[in-house]
Amino acid sequence: MEKQQKDYSQYTKIDFFTDDLFISYVLHPDEENMAYWELIGKNFPGIVPEMEEARHWILALNGQSAYRPSAGKPELWQKIAAEIQAHDRRQLRYIRPIKRAARWIGSAAAIFILGWMLHEYSQQGEKEHYAGYGAQQEIVLPDESVVTLNGNSTIRYARTWKSDKPREIWLQGEAYFTVKHVALKNRLQQSDSFRVHVQDLDITVLGTRFNVRNRRTTTEISLVEGSLRINQTATGALLKVLKPGDAFIYDSTSHELKSLERKAVANKAWTNNEIDLDGYTLEDILHILEDTYGYEITLQAPELAQKRLSGTIPAHNAEDILFVLKKVFNLRINQKSNHLTISPNQYP
Amino acid sequence: MFDEKNIWDTFRYGDESSFKLIFEQFYTPLFNYGHKFTVDDHIIEDALQDLFVKLWKNKDSIRETSSVKNYLYKAFRRVLLRKLSYAPQVVGFSSPEDKLDFNFQLGHDHTLISQERLQQIRQSLSDALKKMTPRQREIIHLRYYEEMEYEEIADIMQLSVSSTYKLLYRAIETLRNNLSNTDFLLLLSLLSLKKV
Image (cartoon, rainbow over all chains, first blue to last red; front, side, top):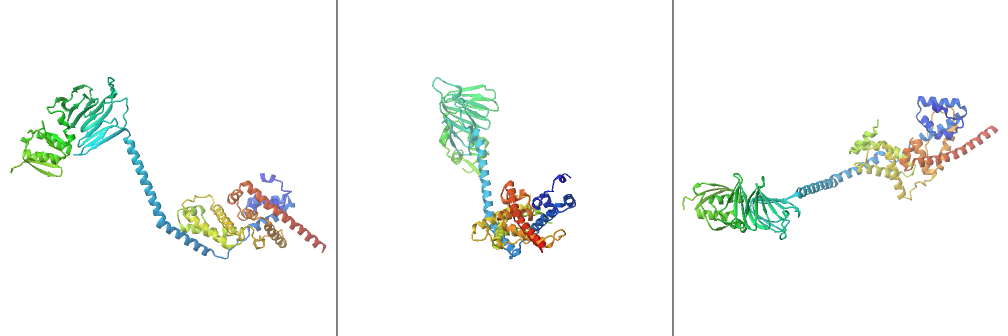
């Protein structure tokens, strides 16, 4: 054993008293350490009394009986138990619910902020406006151009417009545009143009006023003022350059662009809450009621479909239009929620 | 068998019966330890009550521990010392020596040492302990009674390990001085015996 190399001959009781090995032998004797210290005793007989005395010191210190207080353990536990139970009741009654509520509010706030951030982030690229059935909305674009959205129509555009890129709008439905002219005189650049993408057409303008009506498979473009160019989105082919007063209709199924007999100005009458009926058949008007005001209409008098009217009628709401139709064509209109059944009035 | 770790964990999850077991287990050792600081039972009892109520209140934030004993000794020492410093009129570190009692229980095998000698050992130890500072007494208690390692003592007494060695060394010095004194007396008595 390596430990045996140690010279214990000069050890005093104090040395033994502070020796970790000796202490553990005294307090926890086992075969190994007993054999070891007995051997030490044999090798250095002179120190045996010192060892014995140190042993007794250690035993004396270790063997002190624990101090026992006069007051009892159960009594103290009673006090502690009463206090912790009161604490638990308080926790249960007030603090926990408050903590829970705070946690709930905290997570609700976190979710709200997260949702808001996601919303903001999703809106980063594009902004979208939608006008519901029978509603109109006026939107001022980043370049101060104004778009009036008719009912059931949507525009989308990039939130920020860079000055070196054309201004671009995506349209579904009907809208009237008053585009601000940003080009300097005689310095026309590609980036000065304003572009409306609608169905499969690209309409490119400078400063101008025009109406675009995209319903079902047709797109009507009516230029009130300025100049306007129509291209096919897919091919980029130039279809037409419009002059003020021109009104054209493009059919996306037949890819045909036809001149409209109606005046261009008549097609923006809706922005003044009117409908200019010149050139409209009853069927056209019913389509407007369906597309812009969200009705479903069944006409039970097919012979009336191609009948025409002229003049301007108020169109603050669908009832205005229906009232006029009813009177002029002598119709009976049955309404079930948004479903209209129109038939000739049998009893005039 | 008192499964310290398991009981500590169930206590931390709010099991009151485990908590009571911890109290039962450590009441006497802690009381005894507290008695090294003050002879006022009420203060020790108050400190114990504070300690255990605080443990329960903070059980959610108490972490697992490698030694419940060390954790409790350390916490109890802090609570008790604060109490003692707030109550200066009560005997604390400056407790009168005559009130201290060291209940030595001597070993049963006195083969090599006479009963008389054992009595002397008891007396000289008692005298030496009375001459020690309270911190010296505390370290002797933790080392020889609680059988703690230097690292554990350092942790409980909030000392560095080297300071712990130094403090214990000074305590032993006091012991040595006192015991050599006794030895001197013993020598004298032996001499006088021879004379007779």
